[in-house]
Image 1 (cartoon, rainbow, N blue to C red):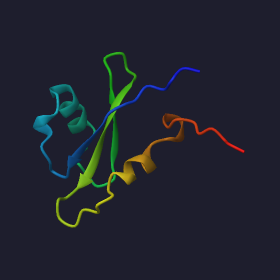
Image 2 (tube, helix red, strand yellow):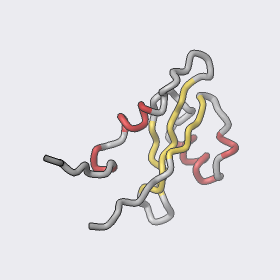
Image 3 (cartoon, rainbow, N blue to C red):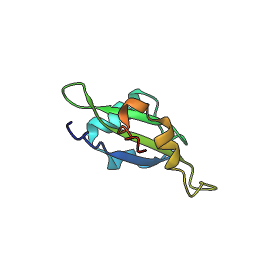
Image 4 (tube, rainbow, N blue to C red):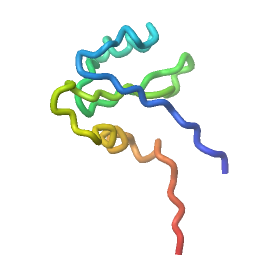
Length: 88
């Protein structure tokens, strides 16, 4: 069985610095209304139209939960997560 490909998850603060993203990612985020909203996950397309990674909104800097990135894993569809092997 082939090992699943890892995809990057880029954390972005609310009203954060989209200018630090590649131009294509920043344009995609803007077109989809993504502004770093807490818990929001936006798939980033590759040139071929596949999913190449994700932007994850961490919300405002104030009162941000320490484990905010746990929301990213909860937002991913199960098919994007590696299958767990059952052990007996």
